[in-house]
Image (cartoon, rainbow, N blue to C red; front, side):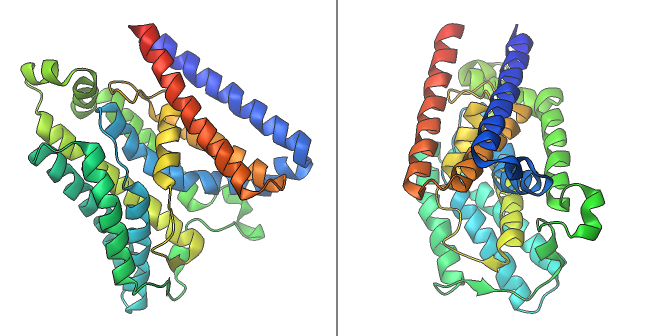
Length: 318
């Protein structure tokens, strides 16, 4: 029954995206359906999509993470600072991803170790990580020397169009396949679902609750670190002010994708489709010339509609 509902939800998301894409193609014109614009859509989806992979595990486990945007900004600053200091791009990449995983580890330790609610903890670390990033960057952007890191999510040159999509997009898709397998086929994935479905029952069944919670937040920090790497590649600077509100897009993508904010339900494929749908709406609204405040209203309405949809799904299952 659950598999049928999940397949129906994924099919609905695909149909919704096709309709939205067709609408903006009609309004903007054929350039919206061009190869270049489709590549841009996938590039824009990659940042939210990568951060959403770990967030799916967090939300399925019954948690929440409001610090994702701040972690992404922090990672861009760490990468830019490391490259600017003369270290190799590989070391900068590792330092940035490690910074993201470390941020997730701190969230997980506070939540699982001190038994503090995830909403309060991540609301606090939202400001903490943003403040650290601002201090490290000395309240300004860090312009790093150009390296191959800038090409991970850059627009493909004419001679490289045989690749179809930038390396960062392919990496995100490959990681999504791995994460989907982990969630559906591994003991850890089953434990995540069990904790989100009924924490007390999972505890009585011998599921290591604290370790599972710690694991999902480290995983969330790791994918936020990878999203920060993509954000750096796209902007080519370390910016402590970037990705404000990204956590809302991530939560919306996960919920639109079929996850329940109550925990115990969600899919990686649905999350990616949710992220693609959001990116398509934003890109189409921008190309139609709609002002930013209208785009903010549309995004906010989508988030509210996602929560209402989640509530309706929960009531129907009860």
